[in-house]
Image 1 (cartoon, helix red, strand yellow):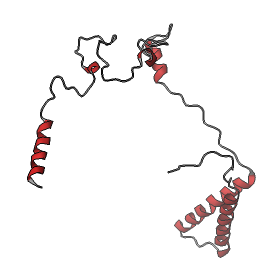
Image 2 (cartoon, one colour):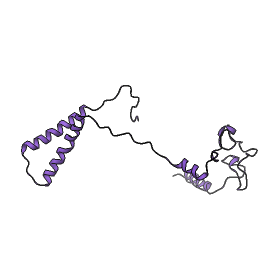
Image 3 (tube, rainbow, N blue to C red):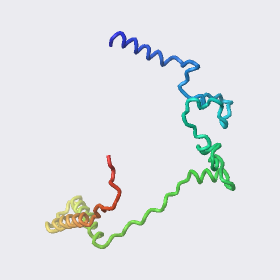
Image 4 (cartoon, one colour):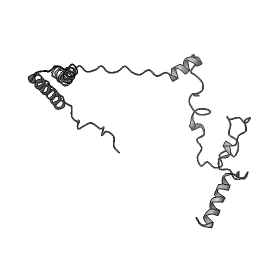
Length: 163
């Protein structure tokens, strides 16, 4: 680093430890409140830096519509808070049963590998025909499930994750 760079770096570091002067505030005057100042009414000059103020359009305090801090008439605070913070999900859709071919294909995909694993764990020696039937059943079930899969509907607006 050159001497100018070192000097600039030192000035930058020193500027972090200094406070801004009273006339130069990096925030609007509305944020200059003491703990005793009321928050309901804006003071004169609060929005000297703001180009647009929402005023009564902001809703909430002083705006149109109900005040969100007050509960509806007839509702106590605890019940209103519980109702606002409690989420009840809708009941899930029932699991589709599928037709007989689909259930048979799932059984052919699941049970032959499980049967061959059990046979291998028990150290049994199955006949070659049984192993061949298990492999053929697995492949046939897998091909059946893939062939019966629903394809992409041309009117479906969902393109998936688009990056």
